[in-house]
Length: 472
Image 1 (tube, rainbow, N blue to C red):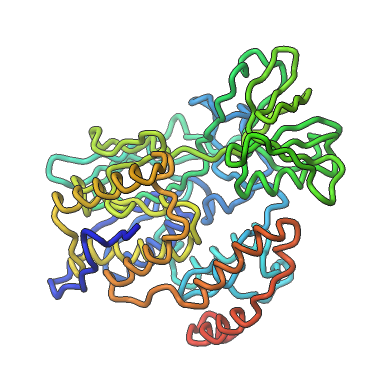
Image 2: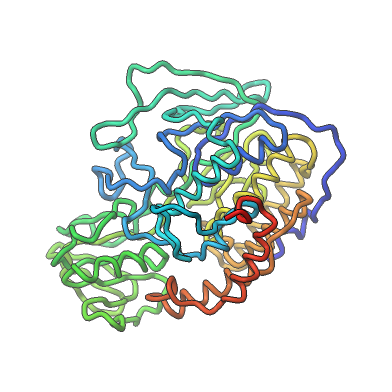
């Protein structure tokens, strides 16, 4: 699909540059680079962060939510979905921001592996925040309660101080006063890994076993000697089924993306099987798969992704979430009726996230200053409708609206053209493709065995021009 078919790339304009007062919601990987790019463009920036450190979902906590499925709207929210053993599924060279390479850095607590553990990613984000002075823009332990548009087009952000209970769960101070502030623009960077999506299983309400979502998975030990069914086929399901197999009695992986007759034992394991999707569950504890196999299971773990969730955002119904389609959004960023003063970073998925966040941030910053122009509201809506029609014509479900996958390089390069900056490096594009193929062929070993050494060399030759990498 040609994402620029309706609105071809427009070069930056020579309009007078304006400085805006901008609120950024969230200090994770998206919020950090958004703050940097906005300030580089001359804007005044305040970043609101519920936690006490930068990093967003990369801040690991052993704590889990009291509702294992994450369905109770009143539950205390644990922001992170990290499990203890998590390593990146992308090589660090391809994963990092464009001008702040994710190279190995000195220090006894650093992880030099090419596919490092989650703590190394957090330390990298903290390095980034320190290098570019982002932390000074962040208001930590500040919970955004409501973001709403005013009559004059400005935005009111209501916040109050948050605190932590004995389980390190973020809670709002009940006696804290609300703080109302006015901003010219709001950039939403709160992530989308806290509101679980749950598989719909016929008969599950009468099934006597336990259920949980992978959002609340941390370590394998609680599953010792149990029969576990894992639903899903994405990164978390692939990792978690292998994480718990050494302690569980049996692990059965159910996926809707395979043929109904699928049934295979995973090589190298004597207790790990792959199935087609669950057909139904019985009140006697049995779970029946579409391949006809039945399993008496103790627990079903939903590794089934997340919903977009913005409980603080009041757009008077202009922006909605329908079957996980957030919209209408022009190029996954701007709602046309509210552009450019409301924008979203990090909505696309199945991507290399940090560089995409960076391109989106540059685009937003340049548009807010007037250096880059958007099409008219009518043209943006026409583009969105054409995009939706193309998805429908290709029989792509609505919930996959923001899954850009193989088109991400085209998307990033389109943004780069808008901004007048360098696009995706050829080595990064090739490295992502090779890493994806290696992950498919060697799911057990891809993090430690690879054959793209020439691309690693190209990357490090490219990194030399960046001071943050050249002096290491």
